[in-house]
Image (cartoon, rainbow, N blue to C red; front, top):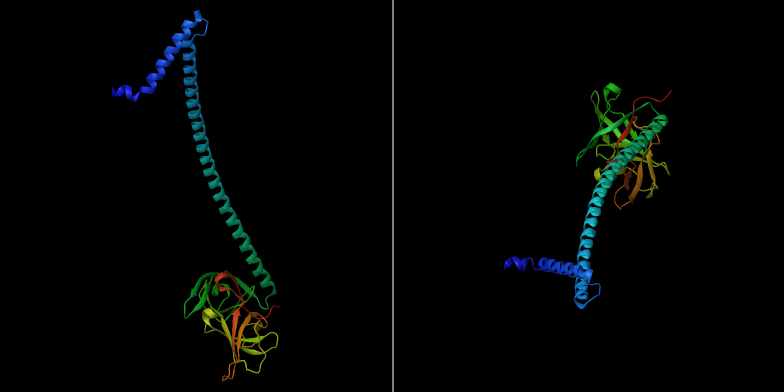
Length: 272
């Protein structure tokens, strides 16, 4: 009994088809359209329409499935191609930017007041007490302690020690760094001292001296280490106070040390 319940629709369809065939066979000899034949034709037409609709729906569903599978494969291929092209674009862009930085260093080397050696930054020490970098040139390349280090945008610092193929550079923002400096606009002199993460401060400038926010600070050439008139930074704050003899002047360095990758070390006397 359960078999007939489960397959009720199929059995009904089969019976209707059989009846239709019998009636149609009968009417081959009886061409007149009687009521029974009309009824059977009506039922058969409905059945055929339902079957064709079901087959068409299944066909459309299958075609849509094949289309989606193909689209997914195409999307996967396009994503992989896009990732590959993006990787190549990043590589080419890195190459372009590196070439641009090296060109800047070459131009700087051409205009440097002393013979110079290009170097790459290979390590950075950014602690509360020490602001230094390591470069990939040393005594084998003519470097030693006490040499000025510059970049395309100004003073980086000075070498403090050197091995055969590496040197350590004390940055201008280190509190142990002191550079003879001058305000470019007024020629007011002072000492630029490192102030750690806050940048630098220009010390020993009298209250009577004219110093303003936005003034450019450059090297004075005194002290025997750094050449004259190389950019150090820009004044960002001036406080004359009431009791101190000197002004409190904050200076933002011209170099972004977080992005520093190539430098130039000045190794000798004036160019011939």
